[in-house]
Amino acid sequence: MSLDTSANVRPLQTTDRQQWQQLWSQYLAFYKQNLPQATTDLAWSRLMEGRELWGFAGLDAAGHMVGFTHYHFHLSTWSPVGYCYLEDLFVDPRARGRHIGRSLIEAVYKAADERGVTRVYWHTENTNARAQVLYNQVGQLSPFLQFRRPPR
Image (cartoon, rainbow, N blue to C red):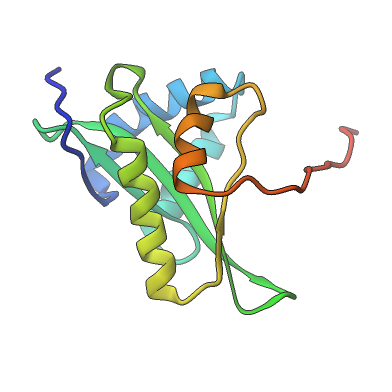
């Protein structure tokens, strides 16, 4: 695969399924997650509907998908126009350092601006130091911690 420093970003398309699936599998492996295929199929279906969940593909110079991001909008009690949650972001390790992740985040920023929301936010594991280098360049670290309901 030929990698270049230019990154093209476009909305995910139905023809991206195979490449997306390969990257999605790497992404889940990175976070040590094993989702049922039905959950992955549902996520893809929602992305293709483009009503509640959206996504972008990051392409290398040869047009191969080397990254993706998924995002959605939600209401907020603190904002009359809501927020945008950038839920997933992944770039193939062989393509990192080529501004693809930055371009994907900027595409979400643009979509959020078009929607008029007041905040774009995302999470990462505190051990994901490589991603945090980029995130510190394109965002501000929040002082909030995330708490979850314990597994039942």
